[in-house]
Length: 268
Image 1: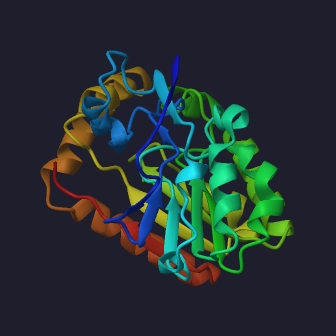
Image 2: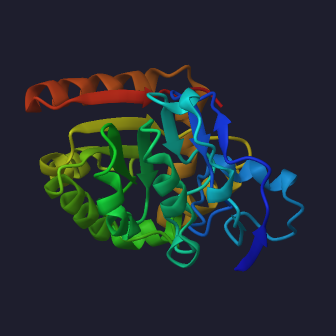
């Protein structure tokens, strides 16, 4: 793992996601998820290392936070192209320090991670009037998780973190993402997390050209027949996913759960 320290020019940037602004305290991510959409960022970094094998820490991140009223009440998301609580955060505390600087401004904070390091900052989270903190899960099976998210916290550690967040009075969510056909048991994830989640969000696998090779290599190890299955699914205009989403909506309705289809990706 190549770790570097850099000075950033800005830290709170306008977002094209479902939020006003994003904070990305790091460039790159240690988790190394094989499906990561953010790997397109590599071409802007100058790194020869493959995505998931380098992290640049924006060591001046907190210094760049301006006490500006323009952020008051606006939603700031941590993070869009990195994980704000990846392992290196335990050393640099960049996410922690940026959050501390934002407390007087009181923006709406949204945080999502694959790390149980989240619980370290519960006391900071509680200082925001409007905050939502969540974990993302694609599987409950640790052996599968280690293949697709090799350096992220185990599913059980994430669920334990979610439980602690909920007990602390933090508004929480579970992001079931990405849903991998024939692999992600989304019903099992719901059952394991629903007691600790105020909302459950869903996203199906977006089979970007940049991740196809990684996904197919993984599927070959699990079941070679799945490669053709995925090609069939993504050759059609969303028929498979429309059915899955109908099942999700009905299941959540029956269970009286607050759920949201966050992203819907079809043909690739």
